[in-house]
Image 1: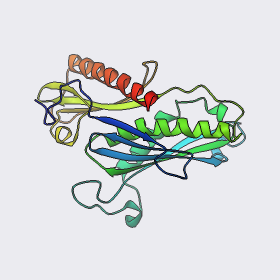
Image 2: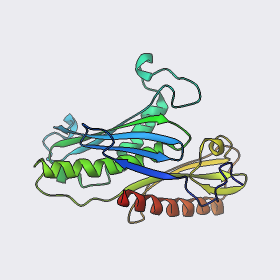
Image 3: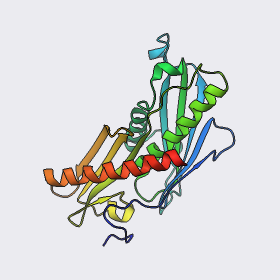
Length: 235
């Protein structure tokens, strides 16, 4: 039995609250069980220098964890003067994943900047951030249309992410912290609404895993992401 008493193919309770803050063009509170993240999407005129003049937009992301998001206080990275390697890797993952939501050429020369701030962590913060930020992007694009920043609403492809792993020799979906620290294998999977993979990050923390175990974990991820996208659309 899992520490949370969930079945192996069960997600934690998922909740997405839109329009969570007053000022951002898109804002979401996303909750994966006890993991809670505020995702805001800001529309900014202009694009980075490397794509300037190409008549396309850009989507970028920043990720951070508040000092008491975890069991003990950690210093703000701004206080230390630099971001950790983990933070940089996660925010690059978020940006890569969510640039697939929309054809960037339909955004004009505008940037959507995502800020994903973890206010409480209980495992799966990167996957929750991707899932919540996708909804914030959708709302920001709707704002752009309503405020004549772009001419028409572009086609939108929902993207979500979930963790899977091997816990006590069993593949399980959506690991919380208690499972994550003991999992023999930990994997993060990003997919879109048409069932295509965007990114797979997997590591055997203890020993190795078989092809059959990999297939079982990916099948769980597909099942979980399908459910998450249904929640995104209904929020």
